[in-house]
Image 1 (cartoon, helix red, strand yellow):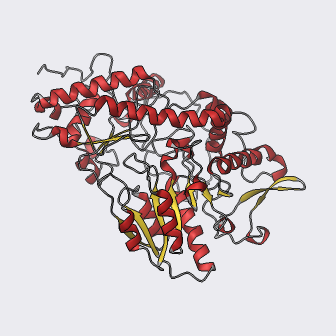
Image 2: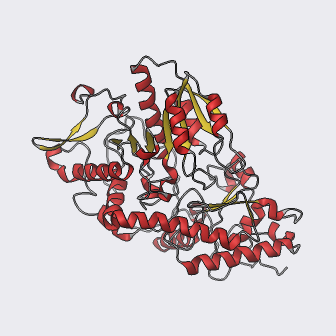
Image 3: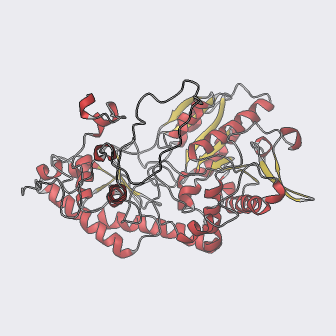
Length: 501
């Protein structure tokens, strides 16, 4: 293998970039400030700084070059294809970004008088109307900040409803093996115990096993549909009927709603609550910790328990109901300060209006089409985890790598050298060595063909005995092969100068 090192550490125009603290040099400045006037009295009352602030001393060109170089090392949806499954790294229309920055929307304050923010309240109300129309649900809580927060909100409404009807003993939540990991965590946060439901060989919920676990202590079922294996739960109507017959509620994780929006009304499936990841379904930026928003739609049985605040139409226009006494219902409380993730609301509403109902339906259709195109182009060289077509994402496992000496991780690392962000690895946990790919609706056939060709080539290379090259990958990244396990267990969270070590 050719030597890929250089004397400078640079790789062509990919400049090696140290930490900004390592660039600093004492006394170096990017500005020229006048000396402050002398002060006789000690106005800091003994709190005067005893040591330097700890920031690096840099010139202006150093600062500009440092952050420019860092931006060049970032891989995002604007850089290339991002097949990360279950996260929907789709194109974010610049129209939505532009609208979110409009004066009157970007510079609001949550303490403004309601009479001065009628437009903002209309944004919230209009988006809520769209979400209710698309899902067929009568109510929606707009304030949850993201997906897991929306789960928590829906579960709290379920808990409040049970307690209000003398069913407070219902403290067990059924969660299928293929559910998102936040589902059991959210249930535990709400004080429920979690009972797992196994899947059948076809990757879907075992209905008989579900029925066997239903009882008068079950609060709800939490089901992801399409599920984390990228499959639609075909028996969802029977599942809903069984859950309701036991006196429990049906919670649906809406993280994969982008596969069915505009094509399926959630209410028609017998669902009582579902959060909607606006930052996935409706193209607002996702990844890196935010921003997100997880409005939770609720059935008529749960609507009275929706959290505060919410927008209502009054004689003087739109107003916010902030107190339970003014709600005419039984809200379980609040889930967030103020009125939700307003910047995400703007982006989502702009996307929805620009797409229209027919455009949203087409987007979900194309997402499913693209995933099945990947599946068709790769199933003869990779190993699909389940038979038949998929929904918005296709799932493979590591059987195709058997006896090659190449692991799922090795395969994903090699994909980085080819200029692609890896697919989701080792998730869902119910599939050994999982490789989960989600192309989204915004990718062209040409992009998918290029990706298919690369993945096929890597698979053939792995089967040809090139294990050592896979284990050395990635070779063309700034930091090469990293030990993520060691980094997670012993993180270095604070830089210290060498002299102080």
